[in-house]
Image (cartoon, rainbow, N blue to C red; front, side):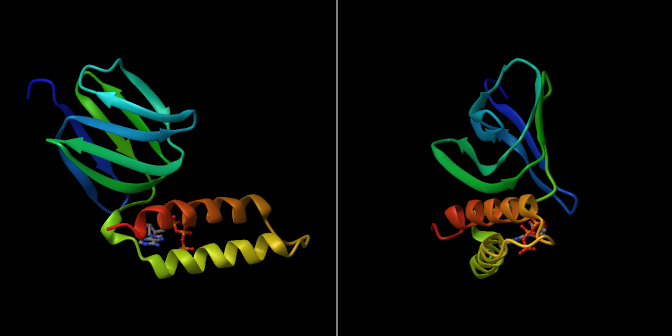
Length: 134
Ligand code: ATP
């Protein structure tokens, strides 16, 4: 379709999205980047963050927890280990993950993997930033 971007979002368990859209805003390691049809080819690593699909004046949002995006003349593909649409986010589960990670980070013990706890906290905060929204 003219001036539309072909987008695919793929996780290990499903083809989460496939379609033509106006624009994608994604959280890369160097900040939020907007992608339109005709963007130069690139591969970029995704940070944990909210991905927004803009199409026909509407926004659709998902929490995307890492992975990478490939942009080619064919379109854009996002490959990620974990992603949820905003209405799929289990807020209670994310709250519990946040509390677990915070408790681990408070108890400074030799057997605590600080980086793992920090990453878990960050995933929970991204989910909570989106999951409470209607
Ligand atoms: P938890 O500690 O609650 O398992 P996590 O951050 O370790 O959270 P991930 O490894 O990122 O979980 O994801 C594992 C799977 O569970 C993925 O399929 C992901 O989409 C799903 N998932 C994780 N947390 C939630 C949530 N709060 N709501 C909906 N799905 C979730």
